[in-house]
Image 1 (cartoon, rainbow, N blue to C red):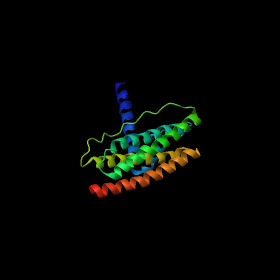
Image 2: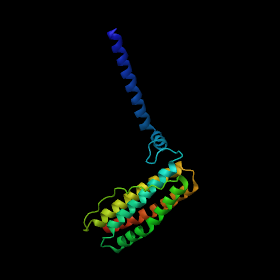
Image 3: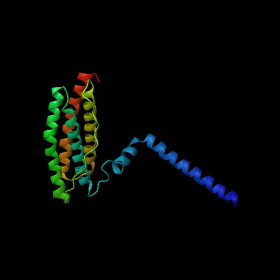
Image 4: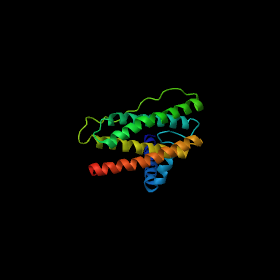
Length: 188
């Protein structure tokens, strides 16, 4: 009887190891499997359900607020280009945020305020201040692009899809300009 229990336990362990090994090999040889799993369940905004657009609106409000918070710090820059960009962000983003809040209210009756995100503390103004800002804003743009790409896969609401397209086009263009500045000013 004792030998039988050990055999069953050993057999179960072997089956578990074989199954996990098979899954790992399958994922390594088939990267599409991981992409499919990512698209279905493992995303920042969650499943494509009736509340997906609300999650997008909240996330995009947070995204725009993050840009404003970075711009508030960047206003201290010694470079006119950075100060002008910071001013444009501080002027334009609140309008975009207001539109998203209005959609939340109209579509979901949701008037709750979204919390401000954590953003990088850029530190004192010195020789690398603008580099820190550029790096933070480039990463911020890249995260926004991922969000808009996910939204195009999961939303069916025309206004949300149009918003995602507009935001992504802006982030791609702006991100390219930020990379050019970084390359010109810091050879990176």
